[in-house]
Structures are given as structure tokens and as C-alpha cells.
Amino acid sequence: MPGMKRLVQAPNVAIATLWVDLLAQGGVQATVQRVFAGSIAGEIPPDQALPEVWVLEDDELARATALLHELRHLPHVHWLCTACGESVDGPFEQCWNCGALRP
Image (cartoon, rainbow, N blue to C red; front, side):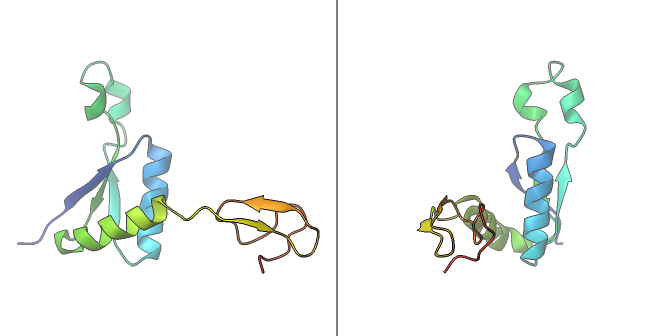
């Protein structure tokens, strides 16, 4: 019988929610668990109070793991904007200075 599987622990609820949204864009249904466990940190071990991301279908676990790894390890890119000459670092597709798209 298929069921949910734990994918990963997140450092906070905001990151967990972002990961769930990114997985959904990739076609994987997931949910955040332990959303309110942080309120009892100290009563339980700290690692047990962190939010977790779970996939809804256990047969999606391998695909979700690969997708999340890809999303968390975007290539570092350095490029010069051809419109204004600004140096842009990171996985950005648009110049932060003038808004021109990366060539």
C-alpha cells in the first residue's frame, strides 16, 4: 500500500515551504510536517523539533530526492551584463542593476 515518505528535514518552516512549492512545480506532491514542533523545542531534542518535507507518494521519493538536490545546488554563474556592464553573480537570469536578461 503506497504512503507518504520523509524526504528531508528543513532548517525552518519557511525553507520547508519553499522546497514543497519547488517540488510541486517539478510535479512532485509534498507536504510540510512538524510545522508547530518548534514551539516545544527544549521539551524534546532540537533535531526532533525541525520541520520535515514528506512526499505524498512513496514511489516519488527517488525523483523528489534528485529534484531537491538539483534545486539546492544550482550552478554558480558569473556574467557581465551586455546592457550596462554590471557584474552579476549567482543563478540569476536578469541583471539586478538594469533588468536586462542574461545573454
